[in-house]
Image (cartoon, rainbow, N blue to C red; front, side, top):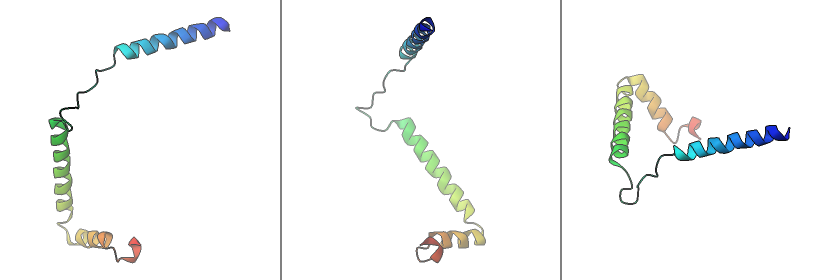
Length: 78
């Protein structure tokens, strides 16, 4: 039993060493708070979301549903 615990702890220590050796280096964020890739990704996602919502609002019944959902005086929103 003791040998099994020792081998398990040795295996765990080996796994931790392997993870530590393959860890990526820390990102440099001091000079650039938002990287350009993150900025353009966020912009692209917002553009797609706004375009999808505009496409959704093309139909009259969808506009009515959005009006009801966004109306703070609607009893269902209280």
